[in-house]
Length: 80
Image: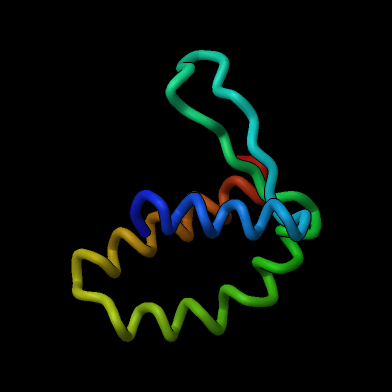
């Protein structure tokens, strides 16, 4: 995902109460994004299905990047 697509997705998730954004206190150019409890439930329900579908459409490097993003999301949910 790039630029406007990412923001549009985050806006939709936020409108549905699934994410929240906070200013990054160390870097004013960054915004931290967190899943709410509702977002975590949604993630656990949707990601297993979407993960398989997405992987089939990606190249090797893209698959590695996708795995990294999913890992970061899981770590965020777990609080690690």
